[in-house]
Length: 152
Image 1 (cartoon, helix red, strand yellow):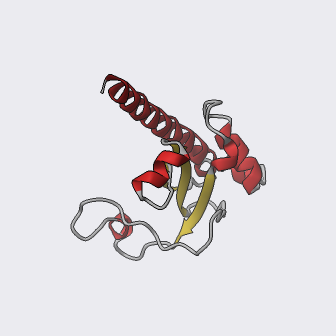
Image 2 (image 1 turned 90 degrees about the horizontal axis):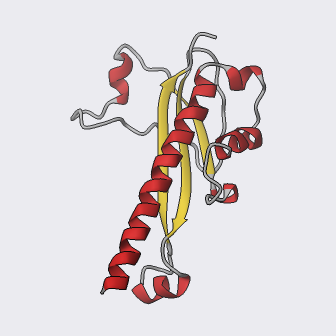
């Protein structure tokens, strides 16, 4: 029981650490788009992903990071409130085109949605298959940023 408890605490700490670092990296790279630095540098998706990965700890493999950057259609008369769920409980996820790795830097004044996904392996594959969850041995850490590009 002691070993299971220690293992659980270590896995929980790893998940919290990775989530926090992913949030930090997402906010920092979103700022590059929001301020126009990425647009002026004609940053492609691979360069953008490399910039994001440079802000992650070395224990996180950049090969596993998925980056989606969308332009959200401009709201009508409702402004910001078009992005809020009708019950006020949070933001609505904008409609997205299918496929992983969508990337569009947008222009000044565009509303954007940045989504970064990183799978955290938390169980050895043998244990995951024994649990009957389809052999999934990872937890998906997802970090998002919704913002409007500045008038650069």
